[in-house]
Image (cartoon, rainbow, N blue to C red; front, top):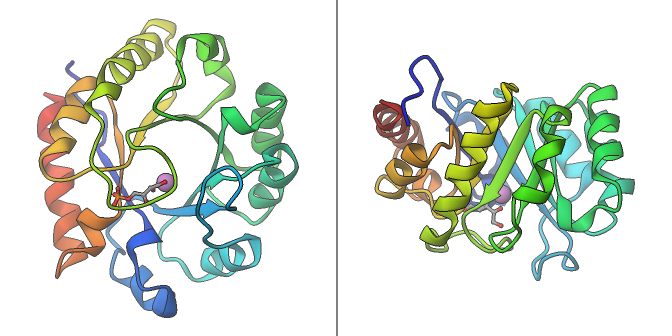
Length: 225
Ligand SMILES: O=C(CO)[C@@H](O)[C@H](O)COP(=O)(O)O
Ligand SMILES: [Co+2]
């Protein structure tokens, strides 16, 4: 699917960074489009990372915009507080929300872009009417909870359907993929229609995260056609 003129964005996930040296780790990805911050609560996913006070502090020192991925329960209560922290985008899981439309509106009203995430097994079709309420749709390409997993090719048809729906409705919604993005899988995800790529191990696992970002961006852009 040709997307001439659309920028291929690379958002490194700090889940694969050294948590003791976060400020230095952020400086290593200063050419990224945004930094992806994975918030996990050991309830929505079986893993625990960082919470609001740490994310607020990261926002103060980050050289690039912050993209929060909230893998937490009770997200209707918590997500607005992340928007108040001055983040560029706040993404909640639809599976964790009782009122996704209301939540997306609240995030925008508080000045953040509204993102909505779907687990690999969650269908996109029930939510297509919601596209005008969103700035970003995140299709998980691994089961949320851990970095370093293999990309799930089974998610590719869903990415294609989401891209077709976005183009069909004429809305300005970014399509993000997260999990298992590498120099190899980014081409498949980009050809399917994604335009924002989260990459943890494929960026921080390399000797030069900056070069890894440039290389991933070039591969993704090439696949846009
Ligand atoms: O949200 C998640 C995992 O739940 C991701 O953001 C991962 O942190 C991406 O890591 P890699 O798969 O790129 O190593
Ligand atoms: Co993530």
